View 1 (cartoon, one colour):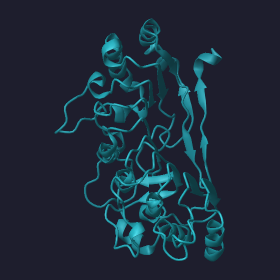
View 2 (cartoon, helix red, strand yellow):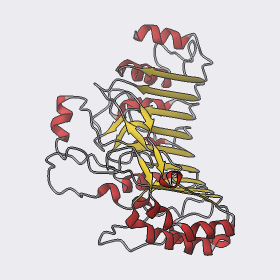
View 3 (cartoon, helix red, strand yellow):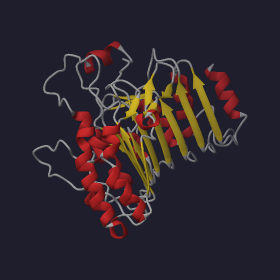
Length: 360
């Protein structure tokens, strides 16, 4: 198979877009890409220029008996023309990786031309996908949806990672995205993925933060180009401040460039504080968020691991005054229009949004 794929790529030197969906991941794909990226045999620069003009790549696997570790995908970031990349499943269990047998399996800080990176199918990035993000010279769009499920790549991985917390860790992504502050325009961070403790709870080693998935992401005020933000409510504001954190206000952590804001997975207990913050923000609309056009609020799922979303009357009533305020300043306001995703072993699919007002 490896030889045939290499031959196919060799006879398509002008290939600009590639979408591949396989049943099971195979290591030969990344080996081929590593050789093509570095113009090594059989892809000698004087004869074959495979993948040198590839701009768009969508690579996903439907079978999850084997899931590749994140470093297996690093060769794609060495391709000289790649701008749009979607990958999945991806697991980032370790921040450090063993010595690579090829330089393409090492990150390339601020060298990759990738501008759009989507990791939305069965991904677990314990360290914020830092190697991927930091490899980009000017990342404009980043989409990440988290899954609590982990598929062990090997028995050694299982032994090394036994008892780790597989929960979403938002602050790790904030740290990684600091390298892209001047370019990032779109950020969809786990607005559709798992935002709960893994099920069933494993016997964790050492001290584990039981609400790591609900911790604060961090400030976005220093992201001057960010226009589209989608994030869980508990990650947008620090509802659970740690000892070293102060309580923050939305007006102090959002960039003026924002045009679309989706606050997802909003628990009713968060509503009062969110409404107060948003009203404060809209009262200074021209100064703080002059470009804001649309505000979407989605309630949390009915069960932590479910996919159904119900817009209860009690939830809707808490947003009445804010909706009127949005109308006055010309911001489109909507409730419950977002989708949740359910994880299945073969695909992602949207969950249901139920509005009680439609059945009154």
